[in-house]
Image (cartoon, rainbow over all chains, first blue to last red; front, side, top):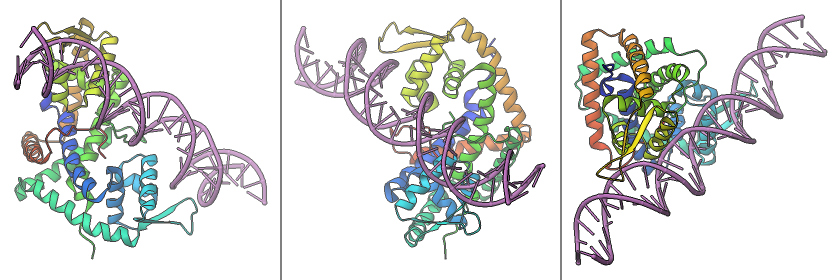
Length: 158
Length: 158
DNA sequence: GTTTTATCGTTTCAAATGAAACGTTATAAG
DNA sequence: CTTATAACGTTTCATTTGAAACGATAAAAC
């Protein structure tokens, strides 16, 4: 008899598909409307949280590859959305922050992203939303214990 | 004032990171122990559910790109894990199924995957697990309404 | 002070990716 | 029947990818 692995009840599988669908649905929006690729959006949104940040800060916060962050940052700088300045005390670090245009764009993009999320979450009650966060937190914490140290989170995981 | 987009409370972001971590933690296991790449594992596990399947069936069930499925199938066939036969009624279709070795390997891999999942889910109570499935189902259904038809789910979404 | 060792961000390069073109087979329309 | 259209899986090719090497800077060890 074969082992009872029901794929559509297998968490890694379902999580992957859900995550892909959510990312894609959102990505089509900001790609079409703001010309941001997914890595660019990630970097951009991260800087919306806190500024200035080094590239490495962004790597840590987003679980993206550092080469990918480097390239996304370069494109954003080239597009005039970010300012990149050397760190005064440590020449290895960059101080990344929004340019004026970047700040303006963020002021447009962020509310849109939030509105989209709200629309998605509108199928859940307040209680369910709280549950969702709690569950995800527990799982993330648990899986973090399993991940071998220093293994980077590559992007094409499926 | 800047828009209040808290990234670590932003569902697409958190979902992506959780999904990556889960996939990676599991992937390291079956890559090391069974030599299966992630796409290969996906195809393999899908065939564990139902046989025979066409490549296209697998594309639909896994949300993977058809080129990627084609390549994974070829590697699995070359590795002697799958049998590929022409469909008697439709020459365009393939009938993919486990070879004897494939079946044996599946009998090893599947319980291991289930055990790993059980370990991950052991942080949740039965009630919480039920909640998790219900929540994910709701979200997936909701987001499915948003996805433009026929847009394939690419893999590098972050 | 000098020499290792580590860190940051970029670049290189081989591998993976996926959109599009393709050959083949099946179905629909004429 | 013949032609046009669609579907399946493979292949091509330009792009993306990330692991590793790299140069430059800083910190630690001596």
